[in-house]
Image (cartoon, rainbow, N blue to C red):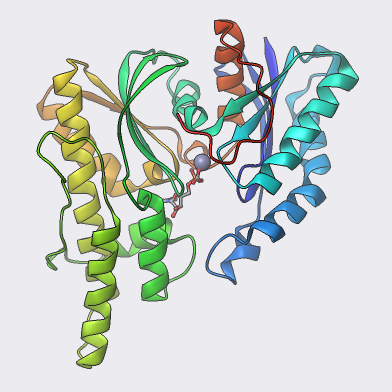
Length: 331
Ligand code: KG4
Ligand code: ZN
């Protein structure tokens, strides 16, 4: 089954053709990061306009590179949420129009589930059940993935998303946008010797909270600047990142043990983080738990993951018929 997929929930205009949920025939991404960088974050109105400008070219390229004809497509899938409403509408409308024109079914799917599916592309033998840790710019979820489209939500952030904390801390340090990749790089050259809080919340809680940590880093920066004391951004990056990773690793492993599952799958933009990958792998191995993460290019937003998800949702028959843009769609 060949799925043509479109993803426009935030600042990437993306289209892909994916076969049977795992084989990527094409995967085109037009990123708007250079535009939004100037503003230190995504400007929704600009994002919508750039999607409109890019979508047809991206779609054409995805079809051309896949080597298939439009009539060979079996299903069109697009992200219906969560995301910026104006951005979502561009991808959804294009997908619906195309499906109608070629007389093939259309489904709207949930971006958060999509991130997990990136792992099915990178690991051909990976199958549920497993523990999923979804950490991106907009979301932080700890889930039990019972089946391809059957997720049990166990923990979530109570304030900032994990990637959002990276971006805000990076902005406070004046080191650029998006913050995750920059902090990842700087942290490698830093010493994690500043004592930032690890927010575990109540005992047994699988929820997260990153805003206290973010504020602690910002307060530290202000304090040092007021006292005119020097600090190394590398050390701040390493210390902040360590605090984030300690919490992510602790909660994911604790949940895997509680559920007696020997696989943890990470997904979303922050799953590109080199230290998170290493630390989680190392700690999980001690408990006999395997760790999976997508190839680097599939961690951040892309349409291949939406093509994989589209296939599994269609195959499950669990199609709820809601094909409207849903900015606040949850799990
Ligand atoms: O999944 P994504 O592309 O968009 C959302 O669905 O939100 O994630 C983007 C987020 C940004 O916050 C970015 O800073 C973060 O992923 N990110 C990283 C890394 N690469 C991207 N965070 C930490 N380390 C990285 N290497
Ligand atoms: Zn995303």
